[in-house]
Amino acid sequence: MSREEKKKVLFVIGMEQKLEQYIKEETNFNLENMIILQTYQPVVSHAFDDLMRDIIIAVYKENVEEIVVVSTNDYQKNTGDVLNKIYKSKELQDKIQTLDYLFKNCMPEFPEGTVSVWLQGGKTLTDSIQKTVNIIRNHPLLPSHVKVKDLHINQGNEKLSEVF
Image 1 (spheres, rainbow, N blue to C red):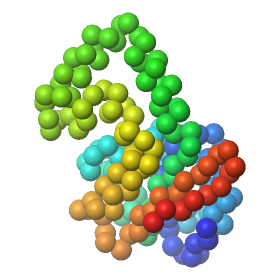
Image 2 (tube, helix red, strand yellow):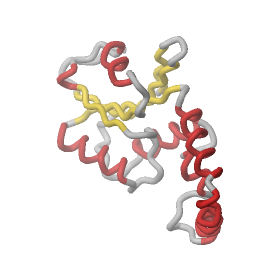
Image 3 (spheres, rainbow, N blue to C red):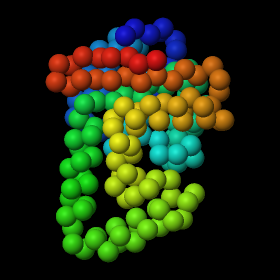
């Protein structure tokens, strides 16, 4: 993956160790024009959440011309570990039950059907990232010239797969 020298690119990535360094090395991109936005999950829950606000501000402030949402094969595994910890907590059982009721019956304030679905961000990695790319790509405040792509990194074999 090679980029034009003057084009600024915003990479939205997870918190996996060494991911930022790997992207810098493998994309052959001028580091001065690379902006990395790290979040625990590179998933936009809805069009006006905090992550989407950060993306829009970065686009205008830094003159970003391309956004790349980076996914890895560790994404779902890490989410599953967190869900197990939360659901095993006896202290949270009543709260989860109440929140699930609110998620189900108080739409549109709650964007998903259950606490679990909300925390996971989607049923599969592909669903979550595609939803994120579509939300970003179709956001009314995003300039039409900004390109949005998905980049998948298989950390097992360190292979990059660009999705358009």
